[in-house]
Length: 425
Image 1 (tube, rainbow, N blue to C red):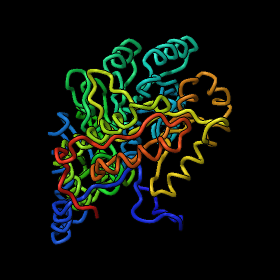
Image 2 (tube, rainbow, N blue to C red):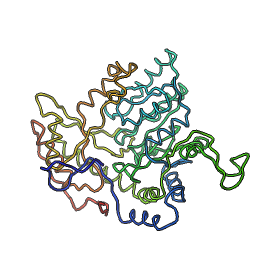
Image 3 (cartoon, rainbow, N blue to C red):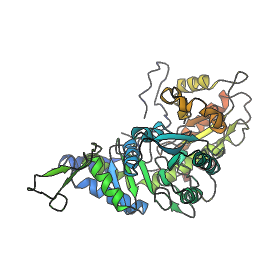
Image 4 (spheres, rainbow, N blue to C red):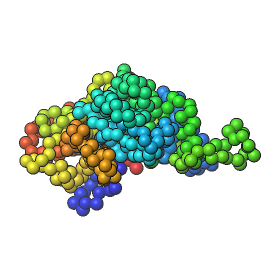
């Protein structure tokens, strides 16, 4: 989560847009590793990978140092190179686009669906057709399950097959969500490879951490090799094997390993994923109920048959000279102990991309992303929030927005709300 509040006017705990959720079982799991023989490169990593395979129904999982590393490994395993083009959504975290740039490929930004904020398959097809007509070497499409709402993966798979490109699921926002009649996000039922993040604001955490999921054995083997300096070991891997000390670097790899400490925490956290997601969904439902009287707040949608995982609860409001500015609303909320965030500014507006000639006119083809960015704000959502916390946040926002249209009603039966028995560390 973000750094603790430094505003001297804020008193009491800060309700951030997200935070980790740990309990005594998690602490014991880490302490057990601390008391053992292996702090890194031990057996906990393999156990975590197997647990991820079991949870997501994939054949192979490769844990790594963070979600960005997982995307980079995916780019390397798919052999993207300079001159390649990879289609990405315009509204996402930087890492989705940067993983292309890391290997010299060009991230090509397309617009999003106005309702779900995920990549728009119609825009993907329009640009695929045009890029191919121009002779561009399009290698892949990356979809992002924005805020926890799954992309239209069957539609994207059909396009990937039609245009012979790879399909990557940046599933870092959507662990525990489903689509297409209960198919789990991250399962690689439609994507060639999926990536996860275990940052503290995500559904489960390892502190920092990530994973690459795939059903392709060759890809998994290469990802494991690349995450550990590109090395192999063993008589069966090295032709001129000298002995048990002998390792050989066969690729230019990286150090993207996940420690046993982090893996142990991940195993413990993963057991609670279902409970965490259900609580997030209950919080989202309560927010939506609270904002129902207002025509000034547009709540997120859940397009059937998707089960939204609600990594973020992103609302939209009209800000401008005749209303409160977003900057002022953020400041006033922070004074009351509520930290909001924006997810996201279109990636191409960042200086690194904006100063490149290839992206100079990109915003003209991204009207939805540009319009959405002017309106969005992410509200606090994590399992420890109570209904009272949710109502407090909703009430504050409705009071600050002009033309207040209704009061937030208390939850009708607070005793019926089941909350995880968790301690905040």
